[in-house]
Image (cartoon, rainbow, N blue to C red; front, side):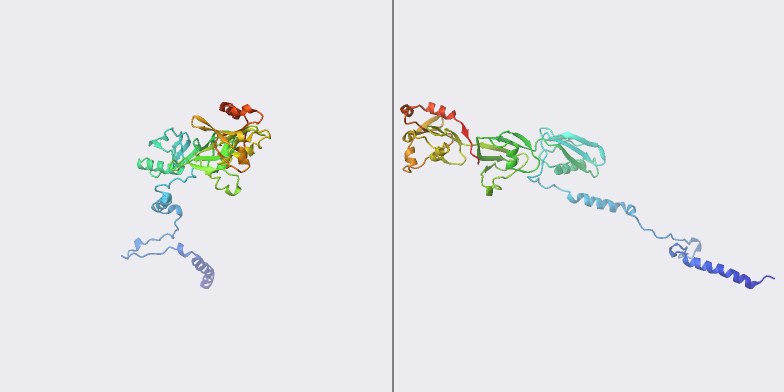
Length: 355
């Protein structure tokens, strides 16, 4: 006979497993009955478990607003170019591109008038602007014309034609030297091979900014003045090394020649010292100073003997002055013409003293 007790015992493990399985089921995954307000059980629904929105599923309006905020952080009128910034000039080669528009990627050369021709917007003047300023200008033109909703323009300088420093005057190799960024005056002069024997200690720097007056620098050998006498030179500047004044000492002296005036004022005694003094046969009382005044030459007697004995004041010389010391044995030397003295002065060697 079938035993009911055995059936209950045999079903007990199954019920225990069922209860255990139900308690282990995740709460969020259980089907729950939600009774509507009208009591219609047919409309009972089982809500799906909650999910977490990924960044890609965020609202597009929020993403666009954030991107616009970042993009427009530096928007507006760009700041004025610093003197140290490189600016676009005539002849420069530019690569201009718009992000996401390959057809707009162009390599153009700036015309002599400072303009470039680009698709959609035509001719645009970029000379005198930095690359950052040019990018802002092109973005505004494209945006105002309605060609792009949010143009991202990049301007890259492939070749600089106007960022050199012009070096002229008394240098070994005058010319234009490409120097990007700022450099010191000594760097520029060194690039030009250094100064010539006739170079003076005056250098004129004309800046690319016409509103700034030319700067005159006095070169000196004093190391303490190296910073003041070695200013910065920017691309586009012009450096002119002035010719030094030369005084000539000819006649009965140990080393006749032309001597560079390494200081603004050179006296008769200093010029005679550069010529290593007069010979014992020189007639010091008959020394003469030949000076150009306009188109004329002036012959001025110099009491050289009294100057040497401190009985007469020393005389300041000017550039291109000629100090002639005759020979006492040649009486005719006192009557030598000015042209003969000038020819003797122009035929002597020129010595340069380091600054």
